[in-house]
Length: 331
Image 1: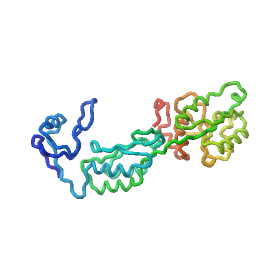
Image 2: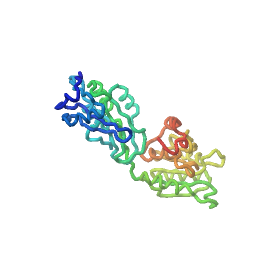
Image 3: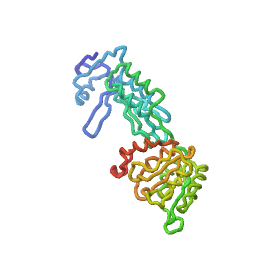
Protein backbone atom coordinates (compact mmCIF):
# COMPACT_ATOMS: atom_id res chain seq x y z
CA UNK A 1 0.00 0.00 0.00
CA UNK A 2 1.43 3.39 -1.01
CA UNK A 3 1.02 6.64 0.88
CA UNK A 4 1.46 9.88 -1.11
CA UNK A 5 3.41 12.75 0.56
CA UNK A 6 4.31 16.20 -0.77
CA UNK A 7 8.07 16.60 -1.07
CA UNK A 8 7.92 19.66 1.16
CA UNK A 9 6.59 17.38 3.91
CA UNK A 10 8.97 14.52 3.16
CA UNK A 11 12.11 15.79 4.91
CA UNK A 12 13.44 12.95 7.05
CA UNK A 13 11.63 10.25 5.04
CA UNK A 14 13.58 7.38 3.47
CA UNK A 15 13.46 6.80 -0.29
CA UNK A 16 12.36 3.27 -1.13
CA UNK A 17 13.75 3.34 -4.66
CA UNK A 18 16.34 5.13 -6.78
CA UNK A 19 15.36 8.47 -8.30
CA UNK A 20 16.42 8.92 -11.93
CA UNK A 21 17.13 12.12 -13.82
CA UNK A 22 16.70 12.37 -17.59
CA UNK A 23 18.17 15.47 -19.24
CA UNK A 24 17.25 15.21 -22.91
CA UNK A 25 19.90 13.19 -24.70
CA UNK A 26 22.69 14.47 -22.40
CA UNK A 27 22.19 12.44 -19.24
CA UNK A 28 20.19 9.59 -17.77
CA UNK A 29 21.14 8.23 -14.39
CA UNK A 30 20.52 7.93 -10.69
CA UNK A 31 20.58 11.11 -8.61
CA UNK A 32 19.25 9.66 -5.34
CA UNK A 33 19.85 6.15 -4.12
CA UNK A 34 17.37 3.87 -2.38
CA UNK A 35 17.72 4.44 1.38
CA UNK A 36 18.57 8.13 0.98
CA UNK A 37 17.12 10.29 3.78
CA UNK A 38 15.46 13.33 2.23
CA UNK A 39 16.95 16.67 3.31
CA UNK A 40 15.66 20.24 2.95
CA UNK A 41 18.14 20.92 0.13
CA UNK A 42 16.85 17.89 -1.81
CA UNK A 43 13.37 19.37 -2.32
CA UNK A 44 14.36 21.58 -5.26
CA UNK A 45 16.28 18.76 -6.93
CA UNK A 46 13.34 16.37 -6.59
CA UNK A 47 10.97 18.95 -8.06
CA UNK A 48 13.36 19.55 -10.98
CA UNK A 49 12.87 15.92 -12.05
CA UNK A 50 9.09 16.10 -11.69
CA UNK A 51 8.79 14.69 -8.20
CA UNK A 52 6.21 16.85 -6.44
CA UNK A 53 5.36 13.88 -4.25
CA UNK A 54 7.07 10.80 -2.92
CA UNK A 55 5.44 7.55 -1.92
CA UNK A 56 5.91 5.54 1.23
CA UNK A 57 5.32 1.86 0.66
CA UNK A 58 4.39 -0.79 3.12
CA UNK A 59 5.78 -3.98 1.60
CA UNK A 60 3.61 -6.97 2.46
CA UNK A 61 4.87 -10.35 3.60
CA UNK A 62 4.21 -11.90 0.18
CA UNK A 63 5.94 -9.09 -1.75
CA UNK A 64 9.56 -8.26 -2.54
CA UNK A 65 11.32 -4.97 -3.30
CA UNK A 66 12.85 -4.48 -6.76
CA UNK A 67 16.42 -4.35 -5.42
CA UNK A 68 16.12 -7.61 -3.49
CA UNK A 69 14.44 -9.25 -6.48
CA UNK A 70 17.23 -8.15 -8.83
CA UNK A 71 19.89 -9.88 -6.71
CA UNK A 72 17.92 -13.13 -6.52
CA UNK A 73 17.17 -13.19 -10.25
CA UNK A 74 20.65 -12.20 -11.44
CA UNK A 75 22.34 -14.82 -9.27
CA UNK A 76 20.02 -17.48 -10.69
CA UNK A 77 20.57 -16.42 -14.32
CA UNK A 78 24.37 -16.41 -14.22
CA UNK A 79 26.26 -19.40 -15.61
CA UNK A 80 29.92 -20.12 -16.28
CA UNK A 81 32.30 -17.23 -16.92
CA UNK A 82 29.89 -14.45 -15.99
CA UNK A 83 29.66 -11.89 -13.20
CA UNK A 84 27.27 -9.13 -12.24
CA UNK A 85 27.38 -5.54 -11.09
CA UNK A 86 27.76 -5.32 -7.32
CA UNK A 87 25.09 -2.70 -6.73
CA UNK A 88 21.53 -2.34 -7.99
CA UNK A 89 21.00 0.91 -9.88
CA UNK A 90 17.51 2.08 -10.81
CA UNK A 91 16.24 -1.37 -9.88
CA UNK A 92 18.58 -3.11 -12.31
CA UNK A 93 21.63 -5.37 -12.23
CA UNK A 94 23.84 -6.02 -15.26
CA UNK A 95 25.45 -9.37 -16.10
CA UNK A 96 28.88 -9.27 -17.78
CA UNK A 97 31.23 -11.67 -19.53
CA UNK A 98 34.27 -12.83 -17.61
CA UNK A 99 35.99 -14.38 -20.65
CA UNK A 100 36.71 -13.98 -24.36
CA UNK A 101 34.50 -16.46 -26.15
CA UNK A 102 30.96 -17.23 -27.28
CA UNK A 103 27.93 -16.24 -25.21
CA UNK A 104 25.40 -19.02 -24.84
CA UNK A 105 21.80 -18.17 -23.97
CA UNK A 106 19.27 -20.87 -23.17
CA UNK A 107 16.64 -19.18 -25.32
CA UNK A 108 13.82 -21.53 -24.38
CA UNK A 109 14.28 -20.99 -20.64
CA UNK A 110 14.80 -17.25 -21.20
CA UNK A 111 11.38 -17.11 -22.87
CA UNK A 112 9.78 -18.89 -19.91
CA UNK A 113 11.55 -16.56 -17.47
CA UNK A 114 10.25 -13.45 -19.22
CA UNK A 115 6.74 -14.92 -19.59
CA UNK A 116 6.01 -14.90 -15.85
CA UNK A 117 5.11 -11.23 -15.62
CA UNK A 118 7.25 -9.10 -13.31
CA UNK A 119 10.76 -10.55 -13.95
CA UNK A 120 12.51 -9.02 -16.96
CA UNK A 121 15.81 -10.04 -18.54
CA UNK A 122 16.83 -8.78 -21.99
CA UNK A 123 20.06 -10.32 -23.33
CA UNK A 124 22.41 -10.04 -26.27
CA UNK A 125 21.96 -12.52 -29.14
CA UNK A 126 22.71 -16.17 -28.48
CA UNK A 127 26.11 -17.26 -29.89
CA UNK A 128 27.52 -13.72 -29.92
CA UNK A 129 31.29 -13.36 -29.65
CA UNK A 130 32.08 -11.44 -26.46
CA UNK A 131 35.13 -10.12 -24.68
CA UNK A 132 35.79 -9.89 -20.96
CA UNK A 133 33.70 -7.06 -19.54
CA UNK A 134 31.07 -7.04 -22.30
CA UNK A 135 27.45 -6.70 -21.23
CA UNK A 136 25.39 -9.86 -21.65
CA UNK A 137 22.08 -9.10 -19.92
CA UNK A 138 20.17 -6.73 -17.66
CA UNK A 139 17.90 -7.97 -14.88
CA UNK A 140 15.06 -6.34 -12.97
CA UNK A 141 11.38 -6.56 -12.12
CA UNK A 142 8.92 -4.24 -13.83
CA UNK A 143 7.35 -2.72 -10.72
CA UNK A 144 8.78 -1.33 -7.49
CA UNK A 145 7.49 -4.37 -5.63
CA UNK A 146 6.43 -7.76 -6.98
CA UNK A 147 4.86 -10.94 -5.66
CA UNK A 148 7.52 -13.16 -4.12
CA UNK A 149 5.86 -16.09 -5.86
CA UNK A 150 6.68 -14.69 -9.31
CA UNK A 151 10.28 -13.91 -8.41
CA UNK A 152 10.80 -17.35 -6.88
CA UNK A 153 9.24 -19.04 -9.91
CA UNK A 154 11.55 -17.14 -12.28
CA UNK A 155 14.58 -17.95 -10.12
CA UNK A 156 13.67 -21.63 -10.25
CA UNK A 157 13.43 -21.54 -14.06
CA UNK A 158 16.84 -19.83 -14.26
CA UNK A 159 18.45 -22.09 -11.65
CA UNK A 160 21.90 -23.25 -12.74
CA UNK A 161 22.26 -20.39 -15.20
CA UNK A 162 20.60 -19.35 -18.45
CA UNK A 163 23.55 -17.18 -19.55
CA UNK A 164 27.13 -18.41 -19.85
CA UNK A 165 30.30 -17.85 -21.88
CA UNK A 166 32.34 -20.62 -23.45
CA UNK A 167 35.89 -19.28 -23.78
CA UNK A 168 38.09 -19.65 -26.81
CA UNK A 169 41.15 -21.83 -26.19
CA UNK A 170 44.28 -22.14 -28.37
CA UNK A 171 43.58 -24.28 -31.43
CA UNK A 172 45.50 -25.49 -34.48
CA UNK A 173 44.10 -25.66 -38.00
CA UNK A 174 45.12 -27.37 -41.20
CA UNK A 175 44.47 -25.50 -44.46
CA UNK A 176 43.88 -27.41 -47.71
CA UNK A 177 43.89 -25.14 -50.77
CA UNK A 178 42.43 -26.85 -53.83
CA UNK A 179 42.34 -25.98 -57.52
CA UNK A 180 44.43 -26.84 -60.57
CA UNK A 181 45.05 -23.16 -61.26
CA UNK A 182 46.72 -22.70 -57.86
CA UNK A 183 48.43 -26.11 -57.82
CA UNK A 184 50.04 -25.46 -61.21
CA UNK A 185 51.14 -21.97 -60.26
CA UNK A 186 48.91 -20.08 -62.66
CA UNK A 187 47.56 -17.92 -59.83
CA UNK A 188 48.63 -17.31 -56.24
CA UNK A 189 46.56 -18.46 -53.31
CA UNK A 190 44.82 -15.52 -51.62
CA UNK A 191 42.77 -17.45 -49.07
CA UNK A 192 45.47 -17.84 -46.44
CA UNK A 193 46.01 -14.11 -46.01
CA UNK A 194 42.26 -13.60 -45.62
CA UNK A 195 41.63 -16.48 -43.23
CA UNK A 196 44.70 -16.38 -40.99
CA UNK A 197 43.79 -13.09 -39.19
CA UNK A 198 40.21 -14.24 -38.59
CA UNK A 199 41.43 -17.45 -37.00
CA UNK A 200 44.19 -15.80 -35.00
CA UNK A 201 41.72 -13.34 -33.50
CA UNK A 202 39.97 -16.35 -31.94
CA UNK A 203 43.21 -18.01 -30.78
CA UNK A 204 43.49 -20.44 -33.70
CA UNK A 205 46.67 -20.73 -35.78
CA UNK A 206 47.08 -22.28 -39.23
CA UNK A 207 49.69 -24.91 -38.44
CA UNK A 208 50.04 -26.48 -41.89
CA UNK A 209 49.01 -25.59 -45.42
CA UNK A 210 48.95 -27.77 -48.55
CA UNK A 211 47.94 -27.01 -52.13
CA UNK A 212 46.25 -29.84 -54.03
CA UNK A 213 44.88 -30.26 -57.57
CA UNK A 214 41.19 -30.89 -58.27
CA UNK A 215 41.63 -34.55 -57.46
CA UNK A 216 38.90 -35.99 -55.26
CA UNK A 217 40.97 -38.85 -53.86
CA UNK A 218 43.94 -36.65 -52.92
CA UNK A 219 41.68 -34.14 -51.22
CA UNK A 220 39.74 -36.86 -49.41
CA UNK A 221 42.92 -38.48 -48.05
CA UNK A 222 44.36 -35.16 -46.91
CA UNK A 223 41.12 -34.34 -45.09
CA UNK A 224 41.40 -37.60 -43.15
CA UNK A 225 45.07 -36.96 -42.32
CA UNK A 226 44.49 -33.38 -41.15
CA UNK A 227 41.42 -34.38 -39.12
CA UNK A 228 43.63 -36.70 -37.06
CA UNK A 229 46.22 -33.96 -36.45
CA UNK A 230 44.38 -30.66 -36.03
CA UNK A 231 41.42 -29.10 -34.22
CA UNK A 232 39.94 -27.66 -37.41
CA UNK A 233 40.31 -28.47 -41.12
CA UNK A 234 39.62 -25.72 -43.65
CA UNK A 235 39.36 -26.25 -47.40
CA UNK A 236 39.18 -23.61 -50.11
CA UNK A 237 38.10 -23.89 -53.72
CA UNK A 238 35.98 -26.48 -55.48
CA UNK A 239 32.65 -25.68 -53.80
CA UNK A 240 30.63 -24.27 -56.70
CA UNK A 241 28.12 -26.02 -58.98
CA UNK A 242 30.78 -26.53 -61.68
CA UNK A 243 31.13 -30.28 -62.42
CA UNK A 244 34.93 -29.88 -62.13
CA UNK A 245 34.60 -28.81 -58.51
CA UNK A 246 35.10 -31.87 -56.33
CA UNK A 247 35.95 -30.51 -52.87
CA UNK A 248 32.47 -30.98 -51.43
CA UNK A 249 32.41 -34.54 -52.83
CA UNK A 250 35.77 -35.27 -51.20
CA UNK A 251 34.45 -34.04 -47.85
CA UNK A 252 31.47 -36.35 -48.12
CA UNK A 253 33.63 -39.34 -49.07
CA UNK A 254 36.06 -38.65 -46.21
CA UNK A 255 33.41 -40.12 -43.93
CA UNK A 256 32.20 -36.95 -42.24
CA UNK A 257 29.15 -36.98 -40.00
CA UNK A 258 26.44 -34.33 -40.04
CA UNK A 259 27.35 -33.40 -43.63
CA UNK A 260 25.84 -30.04 -44.58
CA UNK A 261 26.35 -28.72 -48.10
CA UNK A 262 25.32 -25.13 -48.60
CA UNK A 263 23.49 -22.76 -46.27
CA UNK A 264 20.94 -19.96 -46.68
CA UNK A 265 23.44 -17.20 -45.94
CA UNK A 266 24.78 -14.73 -48.49
CA UNK A 267 27.59 -14.15 -49.17
CA UNK A 268 28.82 -17.71 -48.71
CA UNK A 269 25.90 -19.86 -49.88
CA UNK A 270 28.16 -22.75 -50.90
CA UNK A 271 29.89 -23.20 -47.54
CA UNK A 272 30.07 -26.91 -46.69
CA UNK A 273 30.54 -28.46 -43.24
CA UNK A 274 30.93 -31.87 -41.63
CA UNK A 275 32.65 -33.52 -38.69
CA UNK A 276 35.12 -36.39 -38.39
CA UNK A 277 34.66 -37.42 -34.78
CA UNK A 278 35.05 -34.07 -32.98
CA UNK A 279 37.01 -32.28 -35.70
CA UNK A 280 35.03 -29.84 -37.85
CA UNK A 281 35.70 -29.84 -41.59
CA UNK A 282 34.65 -26.68 -43.41
CA UNK A 283 34.96 -25.70 -47.08
CA UNK A 284 35.06 -21.93 -47.56
CA UNK A 285 33.68 -20.55 -50.85
CA UNK A 286 35.32 -17.79 -52.88
CA UNK A 287 33.02 -15.15 -51.36
CA UNK A 288 35.44 -15.01 -48.41
CA UNK A 289 37.98 -13.34 -50.72
CA UNK A 290 35.70 -10.45 -51.59
CA UNK A 291 33.46 -9.77 -48.61
CA UNK A 292 34.37 -8.78 -45.07
CA UNK A 293 31.70 -11.04 -43.58
CA UNK A 294 30.35 -14.28 -45.04
CA UNK A 295 28.73 -17.50 -43.87
CA UNK A 296 32.16 -18.62 -42.66
CA UNK A 297 32.20 -15.79 -40.10
CA UNK A 298 28.77 -16.81 -38.82
CA UNK A 299 29.84 -20.37 -37.99
CA UNK A 300 33.56 -20.03 -37.22
CA UNK A 301 33.25 -18.96 -33.55
CA UNK A 302 30.99 -21.90 -32.80
CA UNK A 303 33.26 -24.35 -34.61
CA UNK A 304 36.15 -23.15 -32.44
CA UNK A 305 34.31 -23.81 -29.16
CA UNK A 306 33.32 -27.33 -30.15
CA UNK A 307 29.71 -26.83 -31.22
CA UNK A 308 28.29 -29.36 -33.63
CA UNK A 309 25.95 -27.32 -35.82
CA UNK A 310 22.76 -28.98 -36.98
CA UNK A 311 21.00 -28.73 -40.32
CA UNK A 312 18.02 -27.18 -38.52
CA UNK A 313 20.21 -24.39 -37.11
CA UNK A 314 21.65 -23.72 -40.56
CA UNK A 315 18.19 -23.44 -42.09
CA UNK A 316 17.00 -21.15 -39.27
CA UNK A 317 19.90 -18.78 -39.99
CA UNK A 318 18.18 -17.75 -43.22
CA UNK A 319 16.45 -15.17 -41.04
CA UNK A 320 19.06 -12.40 -40.99
CA UNK A 321 21.24 -14.33 -43.42
CA UNK A 322 21.44 -11.61 -46.08
CA UNK A 323 24.62 -10.13 -44.63
CA UNK A 324 25.18 -7.53 -47.33
CA UNK A 325 21.89 -5.89 -46.37
CA UNK A 326 23.18 -5.12 -42.88
CA UNK A 327 26.54 -3.66 -43.90
CA UNK A 328 28.56 -6.56 -42.62
CA UNK A 329 27.06 -6.47 -39.13
CA UNK A 330 26.28 -9.94 -37.85
CA UNK A 331 23.77 -10.33 -35.02
